[in-house]
Length: 152
Image 1 (cartoon, rainbow, N blue to C red):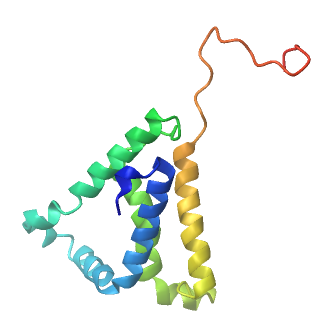
Image 2 (cartoon, one colour; image 1 turned 90 degrees about the vertical axis):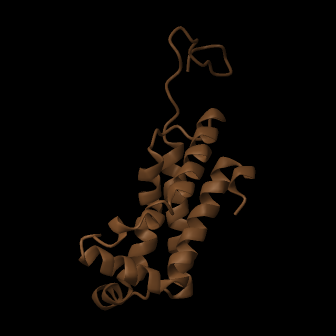
């Protein structure tokens, strides 16, 4: 995905889009994870290999977040594992609950228009959260003035 070379916002957007598409393209993985959770995670606990699979994405998210804060783009402090959960949760849910959601709400989550809207909404929401509110001005800083020289 070459996320390190992208500006922070674009890197997060690309990662969200990738995860969104990946979950949809691999419903068998979603089923396996759901079954593993039914069993209390006891099999994944026995595999060091599986446990280490997500280390690289967490490190990547940490690097993107750090760069985004350094560049003044991201203002919200968030743990990279929490951000990973924020990204994968909706991606996973729309695959794992596709049929019950359609039955209960009459909406096919895989319909092209719905899919495109949700993909955009998820990326926009996560980026908006990360951008947050800029920190207040430092003490002693002058208040901004309007064009007539008076305090705004």
